[in-house]
Amino acid sequence: MNKFTDIAPGPTASSGPDQRQYLALRDRFALQIERGGLPPGAKFPSERTLQFETGLARGTIREALFQLEAEGLIYRRDRSGWYVSPPPVVYDPTRWVSFLTYVAEQGRTPSTETLDVQLEPMGEAAAAVFGDAPSSLVYVLRRRRSIDGRPVLVERILVHPDVAPGLSEHDLDSSLTALLQSRYGVTMARTRVEMQPCALVREEASLLGAKSGSPGLLVLRTCFDAKGRVVEYDEEHWRHDTVRILVDTRPAPAEG
Amino acid sequence: MNKFTDIAPGPTASSGPDQRQYLALRDRFALQIERGGLPPGAKFPSERTLQFETGLARGTIREALFQLEAEGLIYRRDRSGWYVSPPPVVYDPTRWVSFLTYVAEQGRTPSTETLDVQLEPMGEAAAAVFGDAPSSLVYVLRRRRSIDGRPVLVERILVHPDVAPGLSEHDLDSSLTALLQSRYGVTMARTRVEMQPCALVREEASLLGAKSGSPGLLVLRTCFDAKGRVVEYDEEHWRHDTVRILVDTRPAPAEG
DNA sequence: GAGTGGTCTAGACCACCTT
DNA sequence: AGGTGGTCTAGACCACTCA
Image 1 (cartoon, each protein chain N blue to C red):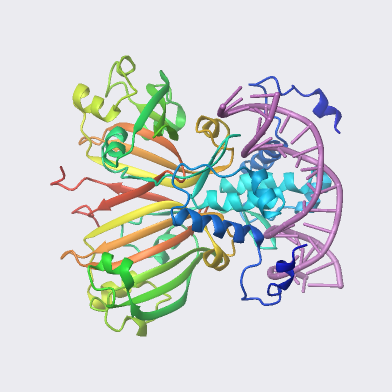
Image 2: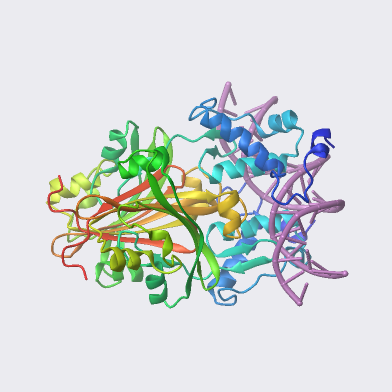
């Protein structure tokens, strides 16, 4: 179909250059982005425009875009288009520092929306975390957080009412960390963090404006005070290209 | 094309059940897997078999499989088929414990292959890590590690020859941690870990038997001894569905 | 309302794994 | 050698975004 394709090294050359057209296209875009030709936030040409420019089928174009998305170089806004990803923020989930603080420190603009707060029975899973009965009530707070106007994570935070009675009456769009510290005198002595790459599906995906199945990062945090009491338990679903986790530790003195 | 499709709630019912066929198919499989109907390691029917069974186009079948792959429920072996993912291993990169140890502790069978070892100039990036000149020599060790016979990560480890002279003469398929401790008397006082979801591309992907663009997790570890000297620097590329990161910390006493 | 990506179809040929 | 997934084509219609 294309003279150049016919001339290119045959598929029998097993260690020869890669023949896959979507990877060639990926390379072209990746180079443009790295060289600054496409700055963060820049919009890509539409898939149909690229079809016309390259003569490739739309599926092939999309495969190249998916590669770049998986690498975190670009992202899509549903039915709007493809855009160059801004650099990720660096997040240390073991430090009790507010999202608003560390994002601002990195020269970005954070924002938060509270989606939902209520006091409800914690159920089996949360009961295991808090060491309490499944029927015990717990504050459940759901928020969406954005950086420079782009939603980057949705979170579900559980706080025991013993720790912070009347929590839901406060403004929860600002720092929960600061609120717990200043208003309730809570301090954090230990943090347990679990992380796992995940897929953003259905509700999470749509809250983040992502396609179902988009790659994400799930971060589970359990914060304890000096008495070993669970102060806060979070489940954070991040868009995979928006965050980089950094943890710096010294082993506990008495560790075996 | 299908009577039931015609009867189903129309697309105008914006909060109605999801119409997407690949998600319906995803749900069917996810349910089968969760209920144990398809145990870890089980092979899926071929895409063409599923085409025949469901009457859907192959692209739609594949979209459903991609969803499950992104969620970590299934994985593919190149040109062999789709398989149910075994549960992930739990890994604490801040603890200086050997892969062979913690994988075995979790009832799995670890193995390691050394791909490459050499003493070479460290270059700009590594020089910044070691606080040394780019022309200084460093051991570069590349290994592939598997669990129950399935490759799960490729890693590139840098060790300074001042810390471990003659390193390349040892057996590097077994524990590097143990080797550094017992043979070179090295101890670890601090670890800095960075993590980011990534895509496995080209060489990494093919070493792991994954398709280029498959989701992965990049873990960067820098281990320091008591004098603040960099003992070891690792770059680990994991298949995203094979690992779960767990970090448990107490803040350093003098922390601000 | 025009343009965008999202979903779906129905083919084709290929490289590679498996037996 | 036969079967598998990997790549690619060339359409179609839809829901949704944006101006």
